Length: 148
Picture 1 (spheres, helix red, strand yellow):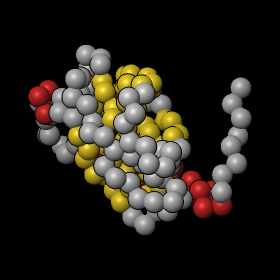
Picture 2 (picture 1 turned 135 degrees about the vertical axis):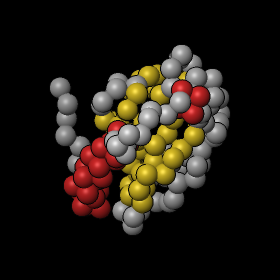
Picture 3 (picture 1 turned 45 degrees about the vertical axis):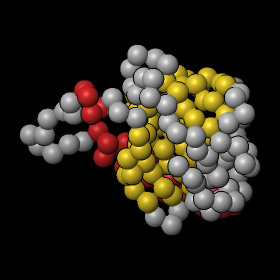
Picture 4 (picture 1 turned 180 degrees about the vertical axis):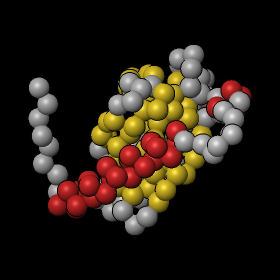
């Protein structure tokens, strides 16, 4: 059974806007121009972030984590929603060497709190297919800014 979380007023104000941005980001990422061909597999298999949208409330990007191409160490000072476009399991490795697996199901959305102060992590895809997610990170509610 899921339990409702009570969020600070700042988060409650941004949630409706975040839901709208999430829907738009997913639609935009899945749509192309008429006659546009699909990305070549080689381009789709490169790890990195692609900015999607940003305003004073949120920062939105698409992350692709290709097999055996980990994301550089980074942190998130603000909470964020993750929407899995192509799911999979990522091993999250902290700068202290601790590891935990996080599984994202295609088409599902997840909530992640801000990272603990001073902690960095990298994401490793040990699977055989790229993992692709849309990240919608709130601004100004976690106490700092995001460092990629």
